[in-house]
Image (cartoon, rainbow, N blue to C red; front, side, top):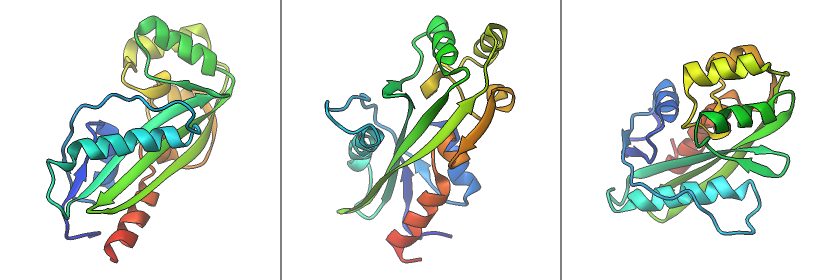
Length: 192
């Protein structure tokens, strides 16, 4: 629908796969493990773009020259602090306790490459959790095990339904891919 060129998703995220499928974009997954590190001094919205670019570069050698590579990375930011994926159960509980009753930003950086062409952007969504009880936090962590998720939660799971009272921006960005913007950029890239 969007392109007759092969699309490569440089991510194993089930949520990103689901969102591309929902958008009707045929793709295949190719992933090479990369460290999610970045140079000091980057502005926070540039950090997930930098990491996404590294993910795209890591799979480039596995792709044909005219393949379109989509890579993304999501970070959760509270104040000026980036909150990564929890290390364990206790860390997940601590992270959600910090987010409870507060607003934070979810920033997804996306890099789309084809040959020597590149489009890169970050999308910011503000999310506000209502105050969560310790029992709610423990229930969520124990039943949903959000250890592979930035900020220790997934908006589409139980915690999003009962704990989030407002979002300002793209819901799908919080899931890990601002899919409407990705579609827009794919159309611009391919001239479709």
